[in-house]
Amino acid sequence: MTDYLELVRQDARLIMLKALAAQTDERLHSGYLVEELLRFGIDRTREWVHGELDWLAEMGAVTLAKPGSVVVATLTEKGHRHLRRAIVIEGIKRPSRPGE
Image 1 (cartoon, rainbow, N blue to C red):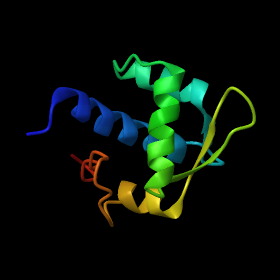
Image 2 (image 1 turned 180 degrees about the vertical axis):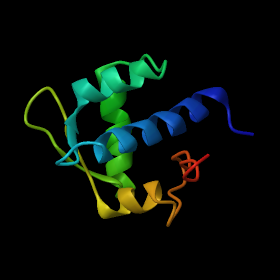
Image 3 (image 1 turned 120 degrees about the vertical axis):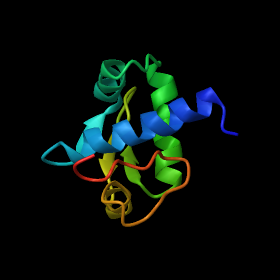
Image 4 (image 1 turned 60 degrees about the vertical axis):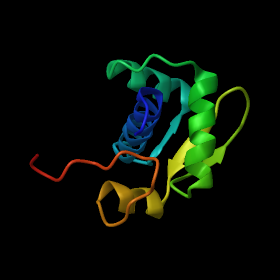
């Protein structure tokens, strides 16, 4: 059975991918992602978000640039495919079917 903290991580990863997909250039920096997670009741530090972004990059869902104290994430095609439900990236919550 998956524990609560792991479920929060999986949900947060999906929220971050969706936030990236909603941007015209499909990029956001970690400060904005912290705020986006907070909108969904997930109150975590920027360092926690950095760790999750590193994990998403290892899975190939995002690419990262680290120009200073923030991390800039860009959605990849693999991340898009997960959001479209064309593939499953284990460790990221599956998005709902359209209309659900």
